[in-house]
Image (cartoon, rainbow, N blue to C red; front, side, top):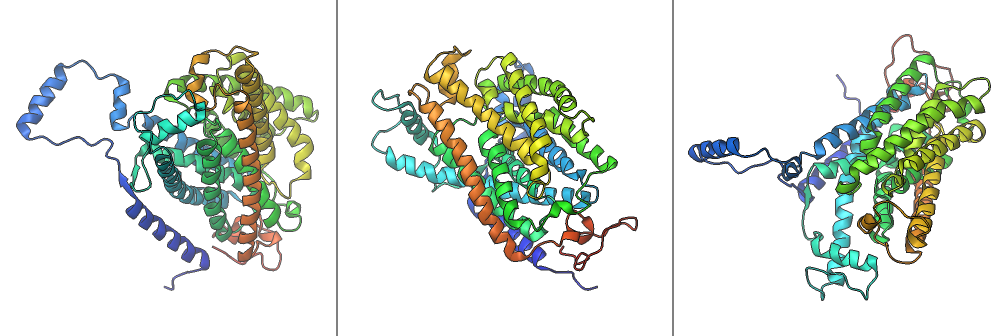
Length: 493
């Protein structure tokens, strides 16, 4: 039997081999969950002492990395069940939507986990050399700004580039945020790229995501404490749209397969439900430990209100009746808008308004803007991620101006703001920094996406009749039908 080898399989194999070599040379296991082995007599004595001892408080379980396990399950459900299933709404593209989302998610998580650790190590080496004359521990210096003191304290505790990357479960969970950024971008490209193009896009997308996150959060001190609003939703949408403008062929939306059907929409709804139930965990993971419950509560409030208003807005805006996509995306848009504002000590009643506003913007965008950009945005990431994300960023600007820089509004638990805002206490620095990282997300995402699209175009394009159809990439059942066009039957995977 002859082996079936093509360029995509060769490149994918080489990429995975390089990943394995990278992990073998740059990382080591951090040892969470391992305990020193004792001889039999000492082990029996220890077991007897443990049986008489008071139960260990839950927070001490962090010694073995256990508190992150529930987040890992929720993140996997959000990413690989939720987001992947929402891609299956196209009537003849479920195999590719699920298969490519899963494959590229695995690649993105491997690559992102390395970069998210390696880039801060390089920056830590710079900080250590910059503050080498100060010594540890670092106290707050009144002659320096809040952010400079924050960086000095970080230089005291972080690892430098000379050290190997110590991997634990938290690193892989954080890498999943990069996977979500990739899947957000893939929503705009759905049905219009071949597997080799998508491999190139994933590698460049993750690199740009990690670079943007470093510039926005680590280097500039911006606040994105859910790890998602600026560096994932807005950036991922900007990257996907920038790339799609370049790689989209002529009028791909005219393909009749660029439509949903009843059964495929059911799977997409199921994916939205998975994302809905996991959203509080998703938004709260990257928040400081003391604020996780607060962020989850605010996210839940925004989602509940968004779920109600998704039905209200959709029926008002669509007199003929809404489609199920408008409802499911409207609900998720509330979670997008609430992501980073949820950690800013905003009362639940205002978070409900944030969720309702995100849902309204999504519904209006699907009604009036989406039909005009269908060629560049297959799934509607503009209406689901970009515009609700911009609404959330606007809320953040209002909070930083009114509650922090001018103190016009008194925020709850104000004394804790210094823990989450590196520029807290510097007049107008917080608002300016948030506006700057928003510009970073839009600019870096759009430019990186367009350049990646130019690179991906070097590998060819999918024919119009082959777009939005599984028959180009997979062996399909006998009852699968497709429209005919020259080149449409050429398999590329």
